[in-house]
Image (cartoon, rainbow, N blue to C red; front, top):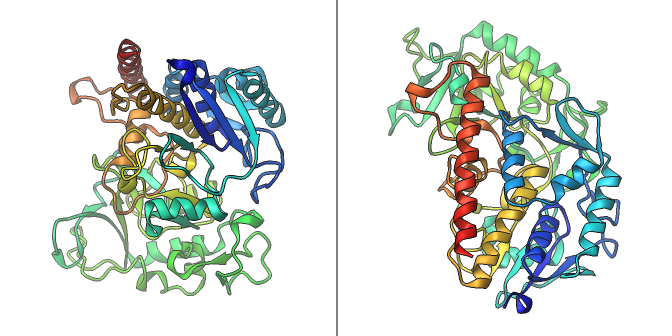
Length: 459
């Protein structure tokens, strides 16, 4: 039966290659479509598969880190890209870093040597929804294929964001300063508030306007966007911005009070420490249902990551904040996953159409590869008529899937981080962060192995 199974995969990035190799290993005939070298995206330069663009680092390997835990779960799913990375690694302390060209060449050779995979170097412009297909075309998906995906999901459900705000853990906030309230007491206290006095705000504003910005790739810029009038004559700062998602540092450069009349407006709030309205106020919005993560509202930014840590830690209550994601500014095409995707990474309205990689909202190289393995297992279950359920939420893969599919009207992409894992019971929760993370990781590995075993028993 396995010999007659067939699936098309579009995109030979990390997600597409991981999925193709795993499915081929189960005896599925895979046709893998890759548009390079017929057509290159603005970011890609090499014709090889699994091309790494922005970094050669695949992050930490320690089990008590989010990236290390994710890698361990990938190994238990049969990842072939992790051994490929290990064979071409370069020295990087505790991180897994690779020779990018050698890694791409090795993955390309693995895929092309697999007899069950047929590679077709051509651009795909249409999606057949009657047969199983896996789309893994990355965050720069464009052209006719992007239009097809938009047609399948609804135009408003395929996003092109240019800036996103940082996310911090709830456990790292100083609750002697931060308070829960909605403006004018309307509804439930949905936001956490970080109140500034006048001196604190002026020091924060002064630091923000001189903070160093990160350079943008040419393909991240958009000629249709409004020019930043405060960036004239600056080097890396010469960017274009959209008024609807303006970086906070550009807003600050427009005047000392601009932020106070925008995202930092204090109206309708009372600081319980003083009994008065704050001079300015930063709001934090829950990023997940468990409220273990909070988004800094209105703080889309193009600052360098070190600068974000330095300057944003000046916000009252965020002095010791743990950032699980820093703000970034780039082109990023992704699905509104909570509205359109199931836990099996297929479209709710078109169950033969599966997705993997950064287009789903998995953010990061290893996260993309992991999503390829998850989508492959879900797709294989569909092909063979077997039930499939995503990993449990106390695992890193399961927590990411839960984040992707839980209702979230402010959905943004997310990478692996310990903050999305459910907390340990209070009676077994170590106070030391490293010990706490290790306990969460050990719980996750045991839970994930039970999930893998249950899947194997179902075959």
